[in-house]
Image 1 (cartoon, one colour):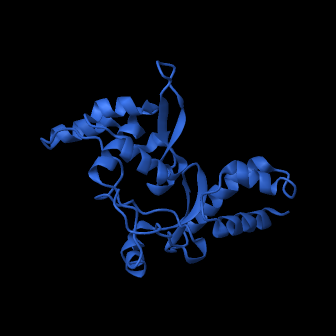
Image 2: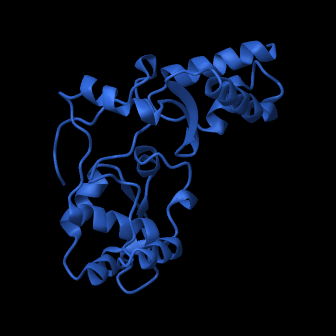
Length: 217
């Protein structure tokens, strides 16, 4: 295939996928028709630049270790009006606290989370597992071999992060808090319990499909 055809195929795949597609997935799909698989990442970046310069309300974005179509942040107010009958994933303060601890301390056991929070956390952890925001990553080599928890790909996708390295640094937040005379408090990129603007789960409409029902953890 010619490069122009490959780029169209890439657009089509991102357009119909309900989740970010990894570079490996895209290479595997195209390997029989396009020999220069190493050039696919460059083509994706070219497509991204083309959409960025096209003055469109949507873009191609790298998030959760994959590529996807997404609406731009400044169009969120109108998209929310369209989807007002649906809900976004909301998290209670205790769930946000637990999720932040897992994000920054992972891999971490339930006992370690309980010790940090000062309360029992099994209910909150079960709900975060159910929402697929965290996952079991293994067992700790300690007495009883307790389960270890870490964040998932859904966590990255939901909060618009390409990698965990994009989480705010605690040192940076501490300096900012000291400058504003506020105590340091690690925060994830949440907005009052709602997710940040997210990649389009239904690309044909260029909007993010909301979660199943309105429910606070």
